Amino acid sequence: MPAFQTERRVFHSADQMLDLVTDIEKYPEFVPMCVDLKVRRRTEAVGTLIQIAQMSVGYKAIRETFTSRVTTEREASRILVEYIDGPFKHLENRWSFVNEDEGRSCLVRFKIAYEFKSRALGLLVGGMFDMAFHKFSEAFEKRADEIYGRSF
Image (cartoon, rainbow, N blue to C red; front, side, top):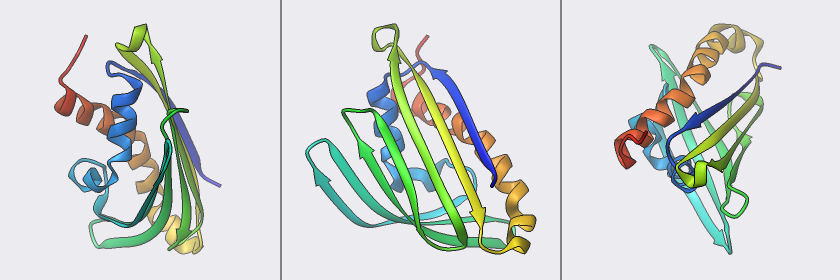
């Protein structure tokens, strides 16, 4: 099963990065290959936000839509994305954010594992997904700089 993980220090607080990643409806504005995202349901409990989202990803003539559950745990500074329906056999990604330097920066950890239901689709778009995942961290860091300002 293809998987990717990265760890990156950014010059924004863990809370800022958690808020940025939780704001999933903005993904089409800056996330590689994300062409549309709709939140179908949102429920909140103390410290936890669960969003059921339908995301469309595309590259050239290829477009796929899938549904996932996005659980944000504010106290733990982490986000879990679990696959519900679509072209995957398996899809799960995890984000975690750890403050450093008294909150002037944080360590962002991102892990994703996925497998397409169709072997042909996996061969056709798997390389593009890998390329997009490698650009995810950079896209979120650039977005944070745009929203919160670049800090050093």
